[in-house]
Length: 526
Image (cartoon, rainbow, N blue to C red):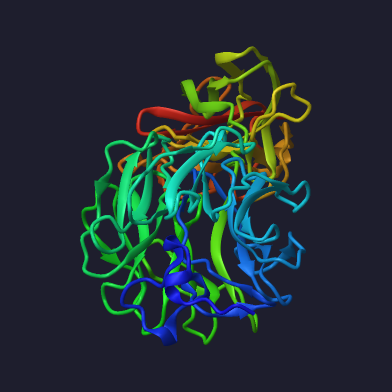
């Protein structure tokens, strides 16, 4: 086997400056071999669009040589996508998350291939005599930038998604490599040695207006854009070993995220922008770790005896729930007259299309009103009639759209019915005994009659309850209204404890709070 030294490697894959030989990762390899093939991947750059987090693609040597695998962010659902005796590395998800480009040596030197997300349909995109690697997709998925040594040293090239139209963007006597396309599609970040050591630059997508972002004495590699385009993560050995850093997209506010004695490389943002995957050898061999975007919560994702490297996070469309149809539910026209409610529920909202809604106003298990509505696309307002025995308290308006031509999310809206100052009686009845059953007629032989008032809402402070009796339209002699406790139930009585018969006629017991009648009970004694 031919043994290559560091200077024999393509310029974009040489050992980064100041990296000690003992800690050279397979990403910056010089002189290591797996299955008879040199593993020469150094670092990579990429970007991801905002969305939901999908799978993480990695290059792993777990089956004897490097192949492309995918794993879920919770370390489950792993699957092998490529199966070739050559070396497959450096996976890069397409913006829509349905395709993957990768670098392979299956044709004798590094070329870029394309496959579907399940590993099928593998096709070759590049076939130059140089080494092509470090693919990165444009946000629209129509173009792919990559690094190539076809002109002697590594430069940045771009091609169409099918491999046609390959053209050169940079032209220097030193390596330019690991391009990373910005999420807004206007810029490409990359690493370059044009100023003496590897630093991070950005340029326009046509290769013009290159601007240097880092100026450290060490090597800065692996640029990776955050989904919102405001930040760039990268790896640097400015502190004697490679760690993960992050900076603003203009190069300001450079901050260190990892801090250990081993090597951390290849940061890859999650589509939701909250996490970052990266490669590290802190556990003895190269594995994939995941951390929060601020560097906290660093946890191991892959656990294999062989190496896993160069992670890239799959974008998935945000599965937003269907819209909620009701914006507001409000009681209007509320009045109380002797604890009888009058008013209606006004419901307003907006729907994206013709919708059939089912509305239920519920308090506990009791449904006060249930009604169906059919509304057209756009804003709507409807009034629901309510029963007159509604009592104060907190209700829930449940809105569903089962069988609706427009899919909508179910929702629950709180609706509070406030009590008037004098309080509200929910039940009022007369009986011949305390707490007895309601009677429309009371036998006159009882001698005593009882009136009961069960309050759903007590009167406000300063509104004492009083009871007044009326028989056949006038007050009986000797009956004086007396204040009653503010409690429920309130019970009043009238009669002769000695057993004298009650006079025949129509009886009314009036419960009042201050000068307002709360409720009255009317019955007949016969």
